[in-house]
Amino acid sequence: MIRGRPRSLRGRLVWGVTLLAATAVLTAQAIGFFVLHSWLLNRVDQQLTEFALPDRALADEAGLPTRTPPDSVTLPSDFRITFYDATGRAWGTLGGGTKPGPALPSGTSELLLEKGREATVPAESGDGHWRVLWKDTRFGGTTFVVALPLDTVEGAMSKLLALNVVVSGVTVVGLIAVGRWVVRLGLLPLTRMEHTAQDITAGDLSLRLPDTDPRTETGRLGTVLNDMLDRLQQALRQREFSEARLRRFVADAGHELRTPLTSVQGFAQLALRHPDRPAAQRREADEQVARNAERMNHLVDDLLLLARLDQEPAYRSVPVDLLSLAADAVSAAAVRSGGGHRVTLSPLGAKAGDSEFEVVETVGDPDRLLQVVNNLVSNALVHTPPGTPVDVRVGTAHAGATAGGTDRPGRAGGSPPLTTGTPIRVIEVADQGPGLPPEEAERVFERFYRVDPSRSRDHGGSGLGLAIATAIAQGHGGRLEVDTGAGPGCTFRLVLPAGN
Image 1 (cartoon, rainbow, N blue to C red):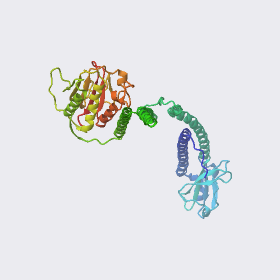
Image 2: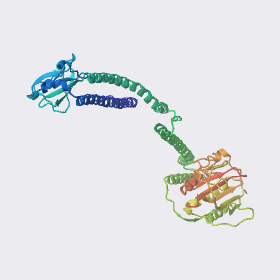
Image 3: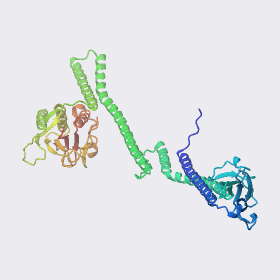
């Protein structure tokens, strides 16, 4: 089956509106035509019904004395009368005029009429018609048929029909012309959308649809499409960012693994080429191989941990005393530093000399949260000169510019901010070291990012510690952030919602 060529929306609207309007006009004209025809015909029927036969017309038949000849009987208008006697035979007509009269039979037996009911009969010649009515006289047995021509009615209806044809033609042409203009004007927003969509398809994703009036269907469609384009552009940016991040991650992981692998390979080749080396050299080479193997093992462990954290790991959900957890981290840091740093524990927002702690509890995985705090304290010890004070603060607050949890100038976070005013539990690790420049603070939570790229794992690690801590904090519904704008040094802050 061959399908016709599909029409455009503009063409369908124009022809649809034209068809509907033309149908309405033709229907109105047909109704008017039939109403007028019925009215004119009723006027003729009323004249026939009200017609009264003059007495002198049947004076001889009734045996009445007549003073004037029958020809002197004058009928009104164009009436024609045909008389039938008691035997049903036509015996005479009355009425004049040059037009052909009605075609009536010579006897009532052939007269296909019903007394008292009007009917239409053709003329004796030509294409005219007469309206007739069969009636009785006051004289016994005598009947007559009174008739009126329908020339006036038929002429009026012919002229009306011709006028209707002309009006219909002009109306259809006007509807097509005006309809095309109106539809083109109405679809102009869609045309602009089409051109904008073509430009967007060509590669300009920054364009947006101009018609967004919520009072119109096209405007609401434009708003929805603009929202869709915004989300699509955001998704493309996120995809590009994820791809760039993945490429950087793979490159950084390869770079981190290349150094220990090169060392292991070099010492292994040296052992194969010089099997008769002294014992001290062999011991030193074995220690280097073991140290680099351990470094790779730590790096692989960190990568596996990050992979597990990225796959929505199942954290334990038990009550956690953050004050005890911070105290454990401070104790471990004091032993690890060997007196090189002064690590203290104090209440959050405490003034000088104030040592009153409050109960700080939340729900989460205590081992993972302790891992985050140990990482923050360890970074403070590694990246500050010996003797730098490190203060660990624990307390409760509400998310805001002062307490943390939200964005502000001088603060960078590894995950989205919390809603202002949210009850939070906070552990801060503040030092008075050299601090971080703002541009480095913005990237410090990225994977494999190190402020000093030349540092080895023994003096700064591979740059995965804060990325792991950020993933753990975000998995608990919280946030890891750094403040660099207030005073010397910097403050790393673990923020957890009170409900977690």
